[in-house]
Length: 304
Image (cartoon, rainbow, N blue to C red; front, side):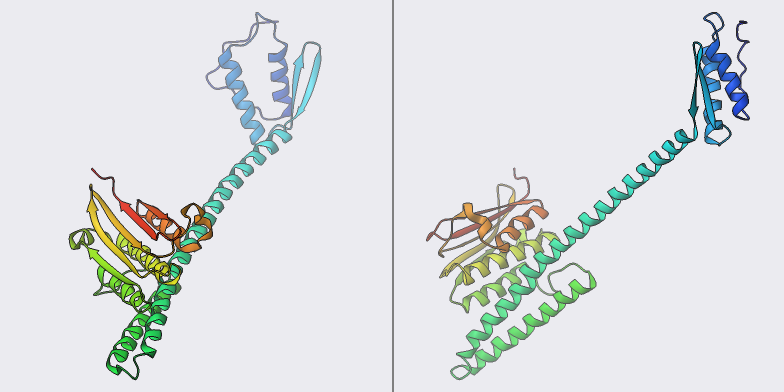
């Protein structure tokens, strides 16, 4: 058999099954001396693949020795189409999973904000109104002040609920700051018989971002609420300072305490404290023992 001619720069595209089959038969049947160059085979294969994808070739005949094998090419095209569809489906699945994860994260955020914000505020209003009952006759002036404060707190709760409905994130109200909000929560706890001392460094407070201040406020509210509602504490302490280059929020009380290793049984509140600290790049530690009170420490920053 004659050696293959010098390969052309651009091999002609097969125009149909017979032409492509004949050309490939010649290549497959070539002896060693007449085997086409690698470039000719590559160009021929590329042209054939283009024809297959264009639907110009229905079958491929490959000769091996004295036998010929017929391959249906439609199935190859279908395989490529199926693979492309699977890749597209995989991308869609990833996008769907990302959307679901975002929805779950948003739901968790709303749950935390509702629990640590609205519910704690409503609970504080309830404590104030309970204290007001005993003052209506003996000290009506103080009773009126308590009712006025309760009304203001309920207005803030309404604002928070509106933010949930409209999808806006919670913020500390205008004209208020972390100190005033914590002091309001402390006054409500005082009506329940728990006296907290408050020590807040104004410089540290002023350096907080709005997000950090909001999360620290919700953590403080949760700690104060736990002391008043569950721990049966008589006194407690809240401080916001900076130690070793880290912002440090600390809450402690002299209540009944609990086994800290059994944190899973302590409800959502303490879990939210840990989660909120993590969201602002901090770490929360809860230490407690039965009859030895509870201590919550949140630290932000890398320190010195």
